[in-house]
Length: 193
Ligand SMILES: Cc1ncc(C[n+]2csc(CCOP(=O)(O)OP(=O)(O)O)c2C)c(N)n1
Ligand SMILES: [Mg+2]
Image 1 (cartoon, rainbow, N blue to C red):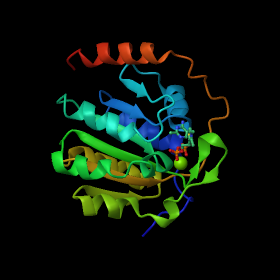
Image 2: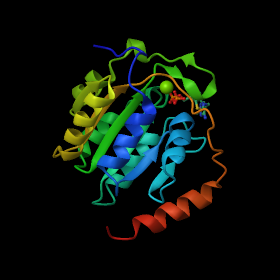
Image 3: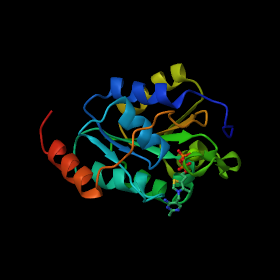
Image 4: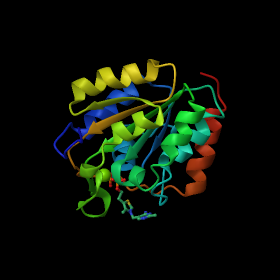
């Protein structure tokens, strides 16, 4: 099954991520996902991708193999489609602390809602074929269960989450310098929880 653009409220799902894994390092895709996350809670353990589309999951993977702490990546469908090959490497190394959530809205929401090719690509099937444990959901309630199970899973896991395309109404400007985000995040990750 390939997900359509109908789906869960992304904002509510991001709130569920922070509630379920309050200490996790959260790597968020550039644009709408980072704007929503910063609006919900500007945590020191949030790492907002900035400019680098296609590298969100790769960045989280690099982090996951260098820490024992929970790492959750909130990727976009457009972004992950740019670098699907990373899923084979994630599955091969299989870090137990990495959970990939695809905020699958079917569009490039950040740049004006142009269609992505995600309606033709079953992300969960691709990830499963690479060897990852996967879930595919399209409501916040189902996401709550799937995300908790993915975090508990003894291996890297991916949740393909169908979300409605949406941009926060009053999105806060992500006006931190890249270096500030990096240093704040690095300092936060060096503190034991
Ligand atoms: C390499 C590269 N190509 C294009 C862009 C422009 N761009 C920024 S965000 C974005 C859309 C991202 O789409 P998706 O990952 O699906 O996230 P969404 O906007 O839907 O939340 C695009 C095309 C970019 N920043 N980098
Ligand atoms: Mg998208």
